Image (cartoon, rainbow, N blue to C red; front, side):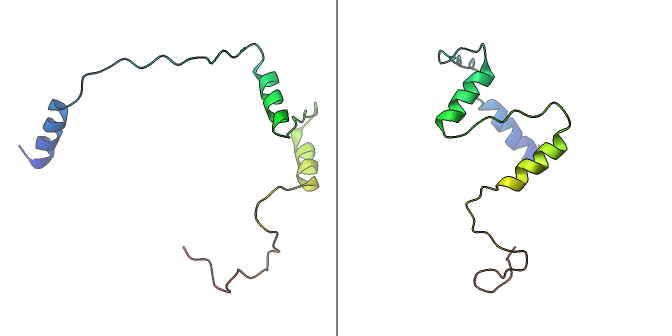
Length: 90
């Protein structure tokens, strides 16, 4: 028996007994309208659901993305040097 076989046999011998998975509660939520639940939760956090148009989404998404970009990083131009003057390290 090589080392690999010895280790695998040892692991198999020492496995704990199988136990059934626990029940997952539904937390009393009404699952009738998950979109309404999501919309309500989003509104509580200050967000809003945006209804897409009936047609293609490309123009709609392009217009929406031009309006506002949310980021926690400061805005930089493409040619802006990195802080510290060095290159990005890998």
